[in-house]
Amino acid sequence: QKATKRYLKQIIPHPYYNAYTYDNDIALMELDSPVTYSETIRPICLPSSETIFPTGETVSISGWGATREG
Image (cartoon, rainbow, N blue to C red):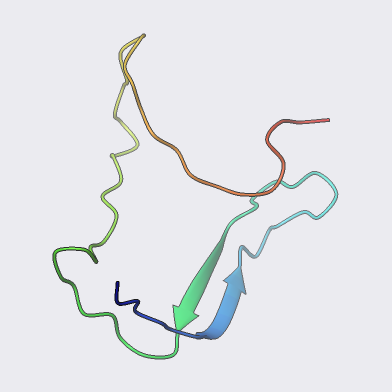
């Protein structure tokens, strides 16, 4: 299977990231070259901040690092 490889040009951390509390633990990653969308490469679609998820609805999340506080 073919892979599409990109390198990071820069990482832009949140300006108010707190390494002690992990508040604002998010960053933008700029790639070294553009990505061409295809059947297997697509942008992520995020819900609006007003979206309410019904109790019991199945959702997917992604991340890395700690899986819980403490």
